[in-house]
Length: 199
Image (cartoon, rainbow, N blue to C red; front, top):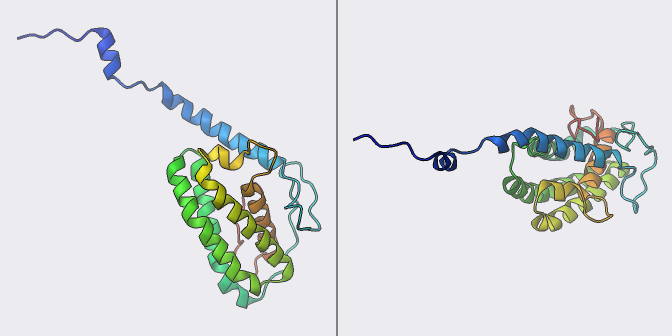
């Protein structure tokens, strides 16, 4: 028995449309462009903590700092900060490129940001006061970020604030980038991998 082919309109409904896939590079590019735009407007670290030497750079608003170094004893406490910073940097890269969907990335952040805060708190007593101040600012921004995370509906909500406040993400990255600059290569690595705000 020969059966007739289904009507054209029925065949179209069964075949998935591929046009949404064409939007992936566009949306990913817009997300990266948004992060670049936000980062280019960052001018200083949090206002209630004075960080001398931060001059404006057109690209990021952050001037790299001269290393002051730390004792080798501090490195064992800085290692967990470095490991978590590298892991989070990779997750941000995956999320911004579209490789990590928001619910998954949101869960990763919810699990790892408190770990980073704890690692920073453990390392703080072993570093010079200039670095400790950056760690205090970072810990505050991590707490703010964790508190706001459940309300965020997308990655854009985390980075681009709907109100006039700056994102704790940007402030936290600036504080960690400053601390990374100040530690320098004392432990054989940068605390924070090179990125947009920490070249």
